[in-house]
Image: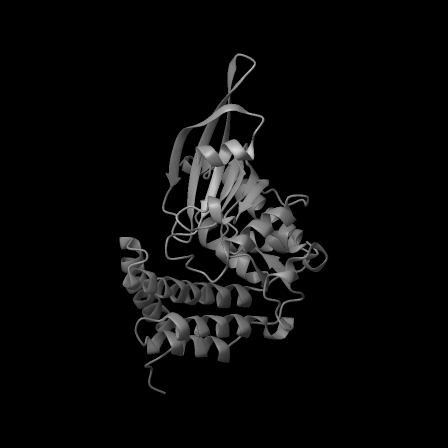
Length: 332
């Protein structure tokens, strides 16, 4: 990596790596924090970077790293706060153990605002303000003209709002067909139940972050200054983003008020019915992706024990919970 940064910044004399630290858990992709130093006018200058690459067996999702890099590039000039992409590296001579990687700027901040760890009543308004900020930033994403920005060139575009939810379920059933390590009939039946009970059609298709909420963004002084980890970026119903965020904000502000606030600031409202459906879909999707990751463990390409435990256990939990919600096994 020293040689790589030297060719990336040839004007920096005697550039070197001071620290390299991996961010955990990093299930979908590896994230590394790198500090570089170089000599400049008799002083030592430093700059930090974030290096992102797929695990040895590939990303748990079907999204290429290059697509995630393109999301950063397209979003940086917009009102959505994202780190600047410095480079997506795919040249054969620089690959890391055969893997492409990206380098983006470092943004100072925290992933959990300090007020969220304050158990006093005085912190309650601050916590609500944090949830409002999360909803505002999600609404900012949803207000973008994704077609004009070019997201339709590499992200799957739903055929129409009425069918976007069903198409997502079909994509994940197809993922099981391609990668499942065991039959999982209950999980497949849950997918069919979701198909038979779709949510209301959204007013429009939007760009979505998917992996969002408390713990997913970079915060500073009560504001989101960096929205990171866009491996799940997609086009579809905005209710998915809101549902995922509410899974992380409920202990700071009740879901009803948080959803009402999103609907105040967003270009189009979403319904509680859609939130309920997408919460269930999110669990189904995670079960499909985590189980599919077992193919990399079983093939020996990625022997992280997390793949084994999550790929085996999480689908069982989801099958149990969603089978109950669907009423499977009940006598009529």
